[in-house]
Structures are given as C-alpha cells and as structure tokens.
Amino acid sequence: MSDGSAGKVRIRSNVVMEQINIRKDHWALVPGEIVERYRRGHFSDKPSRRQNDEKMYYKPCVRCHRTIDAINLEGCDQCPHAPAPEVARANRTRHEAVLQRVYEERALVGRSPARMPKPPHIKPA
Image (tube, rainbow, N blue to C red):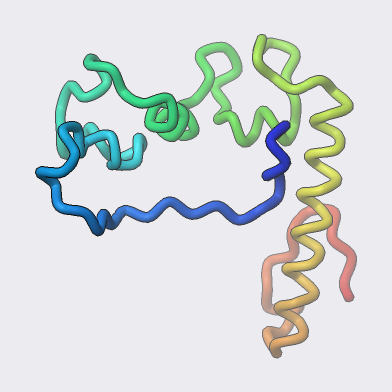
C-alpha cells in the first residue's frame, strides 16, 4: 500500500453510535462484504469506494481465481492489477516475518510450538 498503512492492524467497527435519522444514507456505514445480506441491490445503486473494496476483497479474480490477498502475496502474471514481482517479493518477506513473530510470541506465552501448526518457511525459535 502506498498510504503507509501496510502491515498495520486495521479494524472497521460494525457498530454506529449516531442516530440513524442524522444520516440520509446509513447503509453507506455497513461494511461492503455484508451490506447486500441486509439490503439486496445495494451495489446496483452507488456504493462507496470503501464498500466496493471491502466486497471485492473476498471475490476471486475472474482470470486466476484467487483473491486479492493471494495475488498481492504471490504475484500474478495474468492479472492487470497484480503488484510488480519485486513488490510481491517484499510482501512475502514481510508476511513471513510476521508469521515468524507470531510463532515466537505463541511459544513465549506457553503454547507449545510442537503442537501449533508451523507456517511455511518458519524456523523454530
């Protein structure tokens, strides 16, 4: 990501603390991956960019049949929006470092690494 948020934890609350009558389009506040479950046809109107991105995160690519998180991690020579090979390589390196850290932290809190599934490319601590 070019906005400096790569690798940071991001959470979007499904709870709205304002009164619904304050906002004309309160459906714009519902996360994109679930909005159509409660309001059919929402995406035939004008969904927000954020809702569209959230919805598409879970949809497989029509060319390679993988989700965008897999494409960003592994790269793809079929997809026009895939990251450059060096970017995909950097994404994999960062991903593997995070998995290694999780593995080490779990070992520190007493969860036996032998009983935990070991992520690929991870060396025991």
